[in-house]
Image (cartoon, rainbow, N blue to C red; front, top):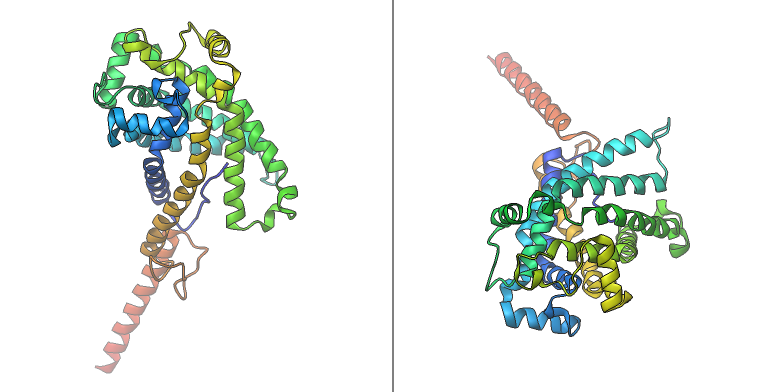
Length: 344
């Protein structure tokens, strides 16, 4: 998976804020692609004429604002999702470590899949709200805002409707993990060198490639999940879904029977195009935010460069570095007082 590297020179709160800011910015910039992808998965009329026409139809019917529907919910979901994912991942990895503290690549990917399922369980209602907000016409809205969407769904359809299609998240985690594993096991052949010598750019390409393959393999589960999230007998046109169904299995059958097998990958073009700019912005914004934090912590001389501050031990944590600075300051102050007294 493409992810940002942990830096022990940042505090936990700083790392969390950097990841949150980077995710917020990258999601906001790539939101138009996400809107087109989800509309294509659900099967609304916008996606009937192909990828480029989908953008035009959204703009004609809803204006520019239509490309950022559901983006606030998606961004808000980042924080609890990241917190639960990180905590669960660390616990699972700790359980599977050997005596020397090492873990195999497959076990690490498996741990990431389980952590993703746990995080999705906690934040799934927000994902349902995001889908409903994206599918509706923002000029004739049924839902207004996150709280209103969640309350309306639970009130009119029941609390369990907020978890409709969650089983597909669990089922989709398996092909997703297999895709990541296959890519990472063949990186040596791709670059003709061991992973320990990969550059930052190579790691970025590796992450994007792994996500692209993994998402393609698990995409049919994602498509059916979005249809289940969107469908409701209480909404106009049953929520805009292009097929009607009674459950998970029936949804697969109806889609294949009425739309063809390849329709399970509707929106894959938008999803694939989104990968590179999304992770590129994610890494770039994280690094920019990290530089500001490192400068505030005293590790670098400027927030605009990575030039290290002279005389600073980069292996020290933020709290340890502050304690050392405080100690040196007090010692220098004491020696100045002593020399001043000697002169008198």
